[in-house]
Image (cartoon, helix red, strand yellow):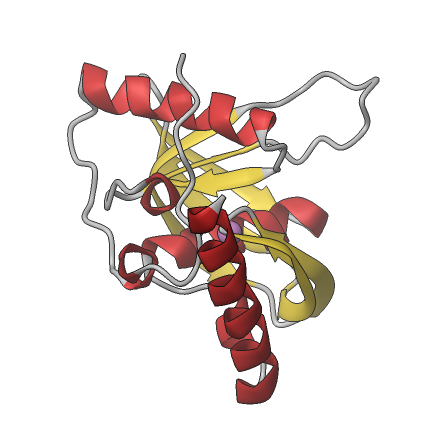
Length: 173
Ligand code: NI
């Protein structure tokens, strides 16, 4: 497994709609495992393929926060939200492509998601709590959408300006 570099906002590749994975090739399985390794290394609770520069519909996540609990690494190929609750919930969100910037985002509290697993088998699950926030945030990445797109223009511009400055400093280092 290899740690892949994570793209930083602003990057045009983070604004694109990703293509379906379709048949799950060995390359796609390697990518998924690399993405899990990259996510745990960061550390983060979710990562979408566009964040490592691959414009395909693939998400990985593990929202088990308790270090004593069994981890639950999940790989979701071509995930689709098939139901959203009317009830909403708010979480302070962050993103590995927008490090150290956080903001409250309101989304449906529960979502039912369908995807294909590593064996290509169709899976379906109802997610709530942090899992619901995470899976919606990651699927948004597949549609070129970032959590800051839910914020007002001033807050969004402020975060983007900070990121431009940070990228400039990183390039100089
Ligand atoms: Ni993100």
